[in-house]
Amino acid sequence: MKVGWIGLGNMGVPMVRNLARAGVDVCAYNRSPKETELAGARTVHSLTEAVQGKDVVVLMVSDIAAIEDILFEHGAAAAMSENTLVLNMSTIGVDETVKLAQTLQGRGLRFMDAPVLGSVKPAENAALTVVAGGEATDFEQMKPIFDAISKAAFHIGPCGKGAAMKLLVNAYLGMAVEALGECLTFGRENGLSAELMLSVLENSAVWSPIIAGKRDMLLNEEYGAQFALRHLTKDLGLAIRQATQVGAAMPAVHTTLDTFQKAVADGYGDEDMIAVLKHLRGQKQA
Image (tube, rainbow, N blue to C red; front, side, top):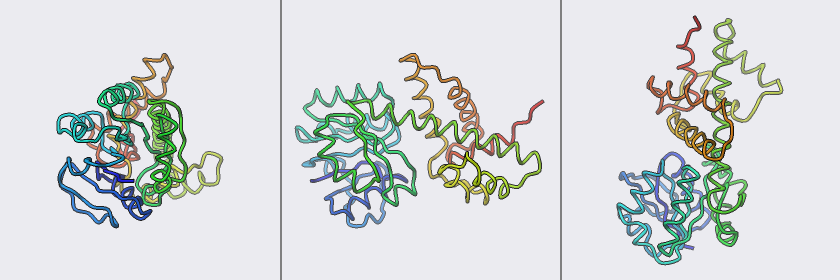
């Protein structure tokens, strides 16, 4: 199976490395020239070369605007062979996913939405979770790719259902990060140290992998992005837009999005999502 990979951000690089280590024939392209060690995968500087003659083209970029720029403005879709499977692992809206699938299928291409759950560490450890929407036969064909990058892969349903599941998870994630930030701020104002709060939480029913994964950041107060705050903010907006379309009430997500947008406006958007804590510390009740 020949794979073209588009997007070498924080997540894309370790995912490509794991594919190469698993013996998958993969070449990678980044819109901004980027030289990095890919453990056997090739880096190419031509978008056409990245997608031409490939069985699968994976998209791992920031949003729908980047996807449309790559596929249509810069001609990636036109350069693909008929029946190529476009595998979108980026997080975009459900409506955007369905429209993209229809457009590509109208051009004689196949499409599957397969966003992943997890951040940089799980990506490095091939421990992501894939939530895929599309044809069952395409899902079966993609198992070698999913096995190389993830601990589990789920076929959620037709195109768009993978995107819906990813937005569900990220909405929950956003609220969890917001709740953690608020409670740690409450504890700090009551004279409790971060180390003590985290030690007590670890021995309570509310401890979770997300808190464990952020422990060192919180103790060291260093917020290098594993999952940038601005990206999670974008995802919360997508979740709310989809909720509005289907009539699902998400009042807590609305509140969380408002806080995140203010944190991004404060300049924390390129830091890790847990940097919302810095914004919350600056808020004082009257």
